[in-house]
Length: 454
View 1 (cartoon, rainbow, N blue to C red):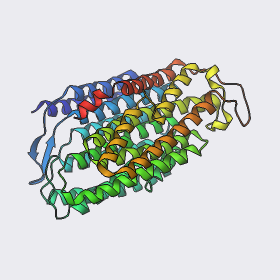
View 2: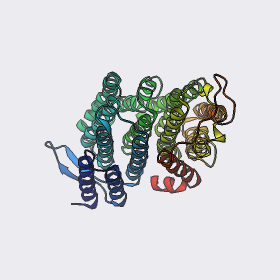
View 3: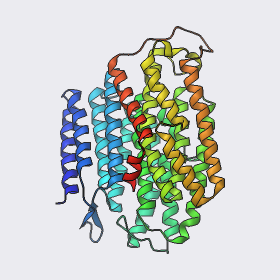
View 4: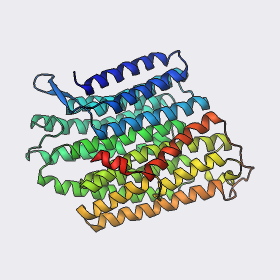
């Protein structure tokens, strides 16, 4: 057994114990299980080792630097959101135990996905991520959960079509070369599936419906982990398979689709007053930025796309937790009814400032280096037009982020003025500050991530 396979087995055992602990033990046992499984993955090493499975179809287990980045993202966001949710007393159907169990299950599915280096195993864990995320929505809104599952499963079926074509043509393992024959159909189906998973325009309609159906903290893990894992899947299929030259035109179209989504999402966020809608449409915008970078497939654009996915996961989880605090303390999610909050909520204001400046793409915050790499990489490999549209999207992102920051924390409320609420308890502030510090660290030292991407 390789080190990677042993680490995967150990991670699953630890998470199994965490799942058992979720039913009765204190929350610290569950958080420790998530942290320990993530640490085991970070310490693992070893290229893919394959064994025959279902006849000639291989089952491959491995780990690399990009896998570790997404495992770490899942662990950090899961711990932060679960700690916040329990501190806030959030309980859907089944109470605290059900929420713990679903979060542990989601993290286990993500770890299975990042250890999978053959397409059939990858698809199995891809579907497990979908099942866990749908279960999370079901805890609060069963009808929306069913809608979400059907819509996202349609995208998964497109991915299955792509994987079936690739396996039939002999490209069942990451690193293989794709035969020219049906490469165009396989790539188109896969890129459509990833556009659905990421929430890229015009496949984005599930995002505002799902994100506003659950409490902001729960939306934080959906945005921070589930959406970002779509970027991981796209990276694996685009960058880890050798596509023929004939696929270039399909990737060019995908770059433009991402650029359009980035601009439309930012403009919609600029016109929204509800925190949930601002966060939802900003996700559509950043999903477009990530999608364009990964589709451009140049070294700079790929590095930017992966870095943007990691930064998006941290920042969007942070923004949703800030939104949860604001909604809890103010009794509303309408920013026109908020104002002057910085005077009595300085720590929340710091976390909100970090989230806003990151969403704006300003240095030295998390999304600045990734967006710079994507714009430069797209411009170099796919032309100035798409790069210019992405730059406009960054400008629009700056506008909605500054509007949020000024309206909530410094400007008097424009509707139904009320005294600013007090700072929440420490159990709610700690996860915000953890994510804020991580976001700043990522913006200050992005080279650590870029070097890991290679």
